[in-house]
Length: 342
Image (cartoon, rainbow, N blue to C red; front, side, top):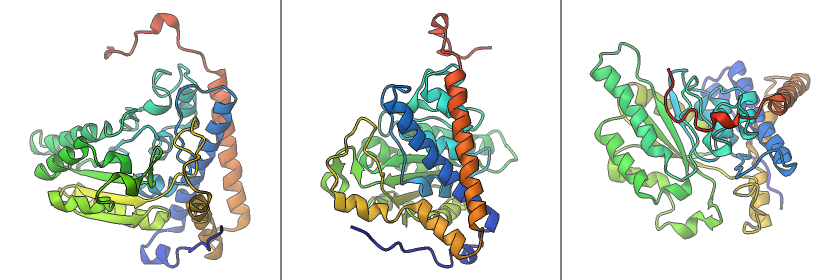
């Protein structure tokens, strides 16, 4: 089945996005896709172990939101965390080394795929269990308010963005944290990456009220649904939510309708989703849509696009070389990093 791709029309002019910003979004999305494709290759070659969950198809959500954040802002992720980390600025070679379990990884090889972490980049980690990151995001947002109201910090509020999937939104932590965020007017943005499937359970079969963004009404915060395959639409919604949070007006719930192009993890044969469904979503590939938009609107020519692809390929190749050549953690350091060191 093929579906005609509906391209964004006048979004760049309407939303005043500069050409440089559009190309930055394209580079970031392409980096995420290329990184994940290489992860699949390395996993099947036996270079990575454990569970590896790839982000293919959802890049517009990560890039559209995270690339609007400041350096002092925070991000909490899920077990599908590689691309969120890349968008937040964690170097690809450090993420790749972590996936290889090497000492040079961003979590010193102790975390692996599901526990990417970087204090330097305010990336608060991937989490193996669904919903784990939401209370952490609440704590992150609370300290921003505390610094401002109690310690009289003169800087602008830091914003925390918390990503999670549709399968998380029937869990108690989700509802408890929405309540606390509104009660304390915390600068946090809840982003539901609704990729339609919670492992092998279709979203519409697992919840009594499939429109997740509508659940925000019960707690008194804005709930917004957005096309998660359109990076411009995501960016516009995120911009408003970030401004609201930073100005002290409180949280926002964003439901981004998206789709993962691979199985739940690389161990998943992906036999439960229909071919027709997958083809319909593949036709709306957010990276292809943006590439067409860039070329059709003369934002860049084909040579420029080709150079971007070449540079991304070199970066990915360098990250593989770095990971392969990096040392394994030493046995005597097995218990290191359990506690804060001087």
